[in-house]
Amino acid sequence: MGSISVLILLFYCPECIVSLIIKIIFRYTIDIVYLLRYNPNKYSKSIRIDYFMNKRSTTQRSLILEAVKELRCHVTADEVHNTIVKKYPHISRGTVYRNLNLLSDIGEIRKVEMPNGADRFDYLTHDHYHARCVKCGRIFDVEMEFIVDLEKNIKDTHGFEFISHDIIFKGTCLECNK
Image 1 (cartoon, rainbow, N blue to C red):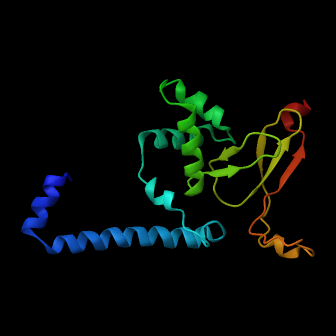
Image 2: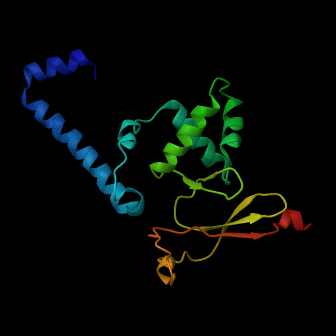
Image 3: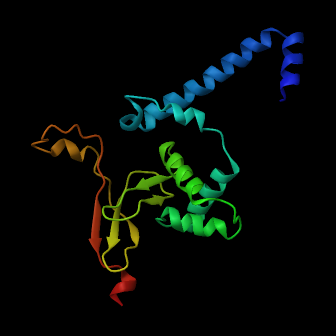
């Protein structure tokens, strides 16, 4: 709806502005409740303002999300960029990096931080573990029950306030074992 349409609507129906304000507040309230409920450790201390500033969907963001889901593996930002640039040569590497991180922040994809390597992005967003092949470096999902509250078993926290955990197993994949 354009700005002229909004002005005409407000002129003929002043109570519509109240309805519009309530809808906007309600929409963002739902977003805040979602963030706190499904990502309490990440968002409970501070709701990220840039989440709301960047929430609107863009063509680039949609392309990047689609690429991560189509590749169906634990991709790096470079792999996503190389996939998208084949069809859309003008998309920049920076755009891909920014949008991958934003998609991770809002829970559309999962960021897997790899020690001594590039961050990976997973289309599966539920809590689960990973395995890394020590020969080829590929990342795989490990099919096992996620251990909820594992960090509560730590005897000496050394002052840390633990909020979550990731476990990455190391081994040799089937392809490299051949």
